[in-house]
Length: 111
Image (cartoon, rainbow, N blue to C red):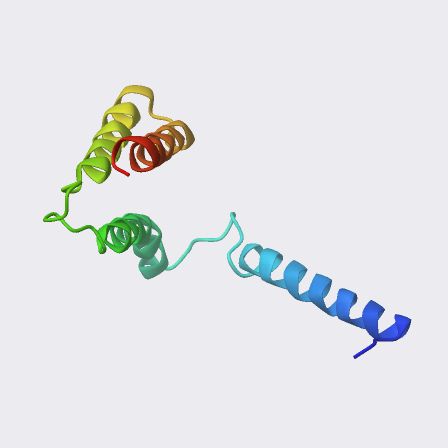
């Protein structure tokens, strides 16, 4: 299927418009100077922790504690992330070091 120049331009404009709309719509609906509903404030406090909990469960769902690695790479990575985050309070640093440690352990030590 070959698109004409006009069709390509229309597709690019529609994608740009939808991206801009989805990026700016929350700022238009919920401006900073307006009081938000208490339920939205509650969700803003609770949802980040819930999402992190779901991500941890999702990442660890395939860990077999009875296989030869016994979950040691995962435990070492989680421990390093926890210690580094409490020490430095830098999310990117703790996630990056934990991921690098996990990948190093899985690729070299626990092949």
